[in-house]
Image 1: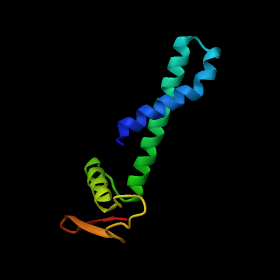
Image 2: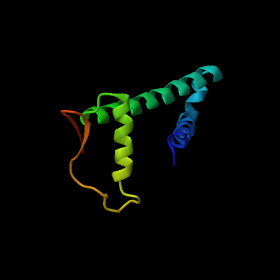
Image 3: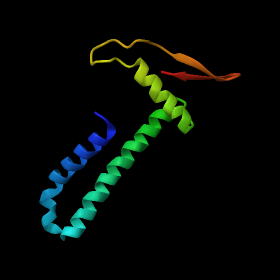
Image 4: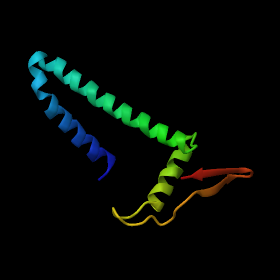
Length: 102
């Protein structure tokens, strides 16, 4: 499942959960309220993602993409499968600079 599908299902779920509160707003106000809550959830998810990158020592967007490719390559194919590589992996970024991914 890709991120877009997750976003759509989260939005629908939030709309369903907040439906009882629609009686306290006009239709337009409620739509704006729900849209803002969905946006807040997306922003909070992105902030958590950025914190994860920072803890891994990543400081640029390019490194984020490399890190995600690395994680995808080394993560188990199915739940319960052992990862293909364990421990700290270092790859040479530039002379004298080594990036460590856990």
